[in-house]
Length: 637
Image (cartoon, rainbow, N blue to C red; front, side, top):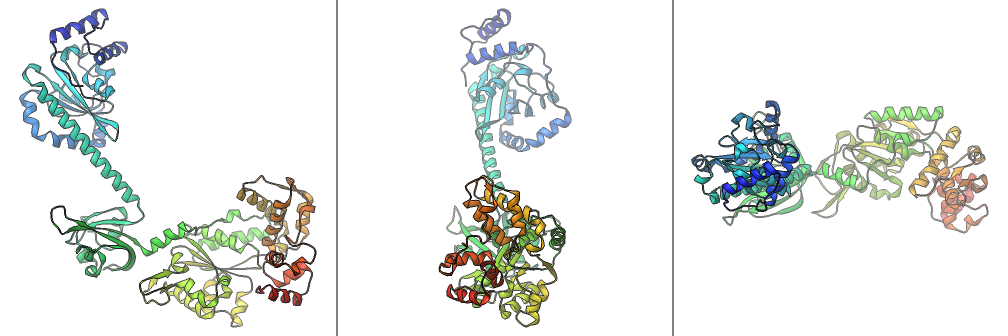
């Protein structure tokens, strides 16, 4: 609040009336009255010039470093008005939001030695009522006449303070002290103060927005560049800088960015160069040839028109390496491990030996082959090995070879061109930097398996219908329900791929060979069902556990899961008794499975797709089952 000139004699009389009698004259400005009363309440002396709070030299240096941006900005703003301040004997102070003096830009303030002004706190508690304390509390400019200032030594001078609001918060205070009020026009001082404070606020607001924008760009998972027509990089975000350093576009001594014309060998054939003629491009796959390496990325280029001419003043380029994009897509698509080795339940010696070997294998770099009967938990183990490996941060892509027609498997693994301009990546590219889990690897045709082995050995491959070679960086975890070595020896599986994936082999024991783990497995299954479906957990009676332990489980853990799932959802009580257990899962003890495909399919899944186990489960011959497999159009294993 800017106030007009007042009679200094009257103001002095009001001040002494309050000091001597404790009474506030009705003509005293209400904000000044409040400040006087607060000064008296907290016991601020009305005489003396020594500040009650001052920072040490070390603390003050640290404070100035934190606020260097505002100090530098203030010095630039006041550079052209120094003569005005000197002519009228004005003092200029910059204070932080706590009223600590950051910079004294002119004559001494409050007759304190210059060195004691900077680093001193000039708030209400230290000097009492002042334009600083009022402007700080009311968040508005305020002119305080000398006789209204709490410290009597300052009654000969006037003071005016303006707050600097940035981002809706009080950040700084700018204070001007007029040593000889009669010699200086008040309007001119006020104009200078408002110009300085508002310009400082605008500059800091702009810098604040720029810092926020830069923080956003630095946090983005792609590289951003501003490139001039000359080939110079005017700006690059954090990832952009890292990438420029990797391709040698940043001088190691001076850190200066080099011209892209000298670094990118095919620069004149890239969308960036075309962008200078006004041609944008969006999400285009681009090959970059540099002196350090050749790589691909997805690039967007947007031309920037000059504000003064009709030409293009530069381009903004956003790019992401293909491998980074694939990893991002893989994580977004849920290509992550759902289980760790710790989620595998068991306490027996067989199980402990399995876990110990799995952990050792996970820490290695070899591809892995998991072998064992259907339903023994190979998929969960594959997730656990990935999670415990150095590739845990990368994607885990699972691919069931038996779910795709043999002639389409190569396209699924390597990717394929859809049209001359469009192609799609395969599972090998999606798993870049991570793990590719090949379920039922024995279903791979020999030609596809041979191509996969070559890609793994060479670390590169190309999509079907294309000639562009792309890097391959994956670890294979494969599983096979049968004996892959025997299949290879009999010529049914490709030898070169077997030699690669069999360097680390883990054999999964059947559930009937680790009966001691059944109670723990059963409890885990019940807990996971309750958590997954947000239902209250049910308890297994001891006699129920005993029943489960006595069964042979031809379908292994997968069948145990099916049986317990059926009991969990079909038992009304919170306790699962032996009578609630149907060891055939959803299969009824009658012959309905012979007529109902859905019943037969559930039995088929309970047996893990294995004819021998299903024959035992339904108590029929294998020949009979083959007839029903053909009838229901199911594939035997």
